[in-house]
Image (cartoon, rainbow, N blue to C red; front, side, top):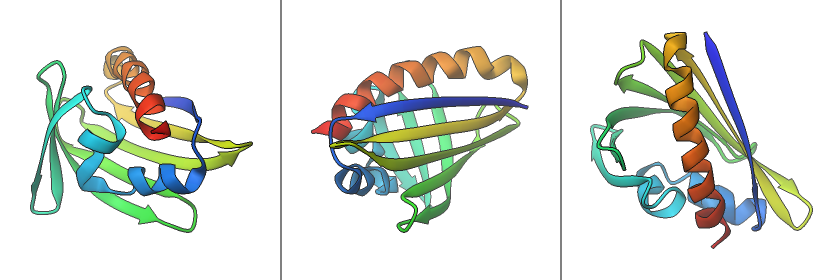
Length: 129
């Protein structure tokens, strides 16, 4: 199983960053605008459209306000297994977002890693606003 991890420094404090990340239905406007072009909620899942036209159905697994950690899984898409966690940590005057994805098949790792890199650029800016 491939594990991908990105650490994203953000120039805003952990509390406002967590408020944006924890809103499962607003990731396309609050966290990754432009990278995500559409979001529709369907029976508790979010159906996301990415900038490249890819569509994925994601299901919220857990959201923990105490640890500022959100876990979700992709339940429809190319991967046979896709579980992700994002967690916010205070860091100096700002914060750090740690985003980890566990994924099968391993062959998807380069493409998903590249998408994570692009998303991280957008997230760093959007989460600081």
